Length: 502
View 1: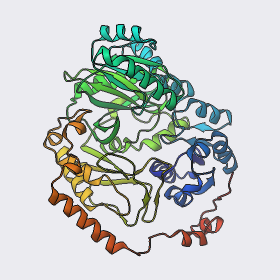
View 2: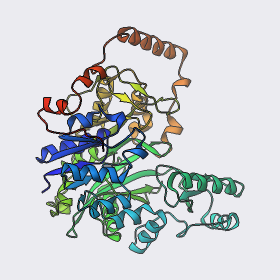
View 3: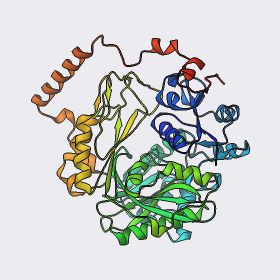
View 4: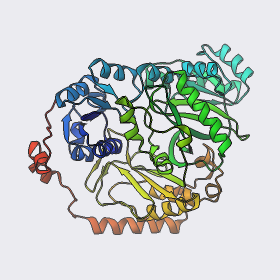
């Protein structure tokens, strides 16, 4: 087993992996940019290394600096978290080339599943159902029109190297093809450096359901049930739950076996997630595979009792899976709300300093966060504050506990989407489990549509909060922190870490 692991990430996922390392008796190494000097993950790790200026392109995305930090610290392995370089095949290869273990799948699997066209072809060859569409990139307006007519409108134009909703366009008629092609290709080129696109059938009211898998280096594969991820805004998940309210044991087995077949198609090992779209007739189709630990992994942990970050580390160290498929039992229900610093009207990020921060607690409540009172929500990174998770014996109890937790959660100083989550959880269609990826746009009543009385109440509450907190000292002031900066700060915590700039 490893003695020391570097976490090539920041925020709540870095904190999550640091805790897994501590549970296993493994030393953890954090990296940080200038903007994250006082971040939570830096405080909790055994060591920390500065890897550059605030922009991620100059710090968290600089492979050479990360590997240099790993070597200087004496780390034996690198955990990429999610985002940044987590699904970068080149990074995984460079880690291996440096004599370090990459805690994730092999570079070849990352590369295959990162290319949507290659992934589609592999799934077809493996018998995994895919949404009807092209197997190769399309070029030219006339050819695209011909394909779209053959597939049947509406269709989806998608980036071959895409993800996160970028390079995607829904086309309902021939008249929309030209502008959609141009827009999708341009966005794909900007986001991924690859303007290849393909066409597939658009499913009008799909559910987004994904299967968590684990695979070791000895050819053993298991699936850990499904997660319902249909509540999305701008193709980004905001509420997830496990298990899905509509998946029965037979469908779970079918989807699980398809997910394992997808993993085997690319000789996968470590943790991964195979995502499916499910139509109104409950037919499922391969969407993509995420070759990393998912943001929403905690809800799978809650219903299976497994620690996926620990399992990742064990697999990377060469251990065999301790469990067989028959050993996996699903118990209870879990829900996750992604708490963002963002305006719930237009979902634009909100930046600033968190004034007061109080996390909810009590039975069935878990928080994965990377902030504290006084922490900065920077313009440079994703504005995720935390992942709020609740667990119950059934879906109703999990929802009730989530409503309690949301009501207890206190975050001031930045705008958050806490009220947004509360409104969605109270919606009758959500309570019935009638979900689709269009749920928010169809059912969410934005704050600007609320009554004048409600607006007045919000304004009064905000004014009172501002009055109470005006001139109030932050929980952590930068001036105070600087007094214990550098090695002294680590020594005060009983840790020998360094903060040497690379």
